[in-house]
Amino acid sequence: MLQLLRVVMSSMLAKVAGLLFLLLLLCIPLGEIDSINRARGESQREAASELAATYAGRQTMVGPLLLVPYVERWMEPLRNAQGKVIGQEPRSKEMAHVVFPDKLHIEGTMAPQERYRGIFRIPFYTLDATLSGGFAAFDPKAVSHSETDSKLEFKAPLIAFNVSDLRGLDGSPTMTMGSEALRFRQRVPGLDDDAWFANGIHAPVTGAALAAWQAGTPIPFEMKLGLVGQDTLAIAPIAEETTAHLSSPWAHPSFGGRFLAAERSVTPQGFDARWRVSSLVTSAREQVRAGLSGRGGAVDVASSADVAATAAPAVPARRNLGPLQTFDVSLAQPINVYSMSTRAGKYGVLFIGLVLMAAFMFELFRKLRLHPIQYGLVGLSIALFFLLLLALSEKFAFWMAYAGAASASVALLAVYFSAVLGGWQRGLSFGAFVALLYGALYGLLASESNALLLGALLIFGMLATLMLVTRKVDWYALSRRSEAAPVAVPEAQTAA
Image 1 (cartoon, rainbow, N blue to C red):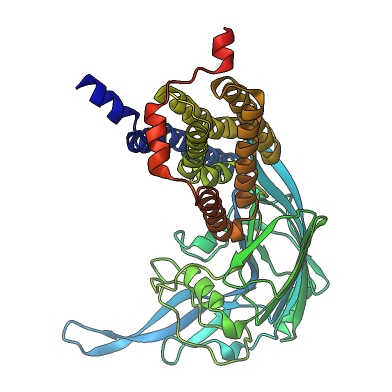
Image 2 (spheres, one colour):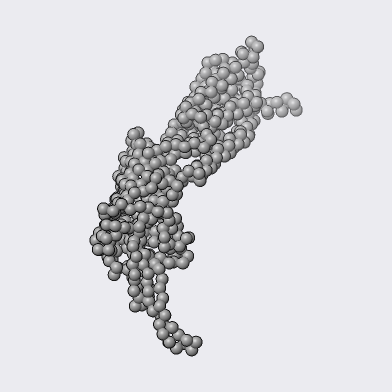
């Protein structure tokens, strides 16, 4: 019975089953390494959130736009307890008319910088921009009356501007309207406290600009803006025609938002991008109008980009218009080490399986006998590669970390198999096979768009090579010889 058990345990089928079971066991350390990688990636996101809370976050820019406060006055019948009209009662309410620019052009450069939180590097930028455009001539008749036979009393207008994180303002913006220099102040008056635009900044229209507005003439403007933000800049196209030209020495931009760049050029020296967005293709102005009023709806947002046009009914404060439509550009990190490590780990089981298969082929054709513990050590060494890759990539460039981890793993396996397989040539050939696998894996990681194709070709190539090499092998005869052959002792162990 004992002899029969030995025969069964030494059979090829039992060895294959044992290797499959070992491969399943090695999924445990691979899973733990993946958990560590995800935890480190989450720590990086927390570091970015902390910097956003203490310095500046991602920026969304809206404006400038023109707010015209006014008071609407009318008379309402005054009735007694019996409902009889006994007089007239004056009533009034304060509202504001919003005017968007006819044209808005943004010319800016984004100077990149990196800030650290622990070991994590978070990209930031400093935007140096000029916003130029103009407002159409103001026509009081374009403002709608909400009450019958009411009169409108207009007050001096003001410029409103907002970014999502005002802490990012690099100094005070300067604005010239007509020939008049305007000065910005905190918050936007006349808006409900719960209106998100109320947290912006405003500049009263004075002097020559106010005179031009009162005379009903178009008013050009130019605004100088310095803004710091974390990785992403989003701009809402609120004008009748919004154009933008942004450039930066950052060579790895990511374009997003509702509207992609009409023209863009990305080189190792940086990027240059242009946008052109018409009001005909965006609801950004409707969304901004809705954001100008809070619960009370005290702002008359019935306006259009051309104030001479017929005004539309007020937009309900709670109208759901979805997220603000913008065009975006982000300073993306060229290589996110945690996403790259996660992608590498997805090939871990395949990688270990190919290495164990190669060791099994050496055992089978060289008539050697490898112990399950030796197979386990080989699998653990491959799993350790992914942990070493993660640790090194936090300190060095990813390609350097990959080269270092792969070199250490190949050297370890070459030295180990030189002793196990009984010769340096066998050890070096096995190390060369593993090095080839590491090179193929790096090719998969470097070509994200072709990763599936390259991975499929790699698996097909490995299987085809194995099938071609073993196409004339008599597996039954080879199995019988393996069962009958005495255990081979490697030369290194004999010498010891």
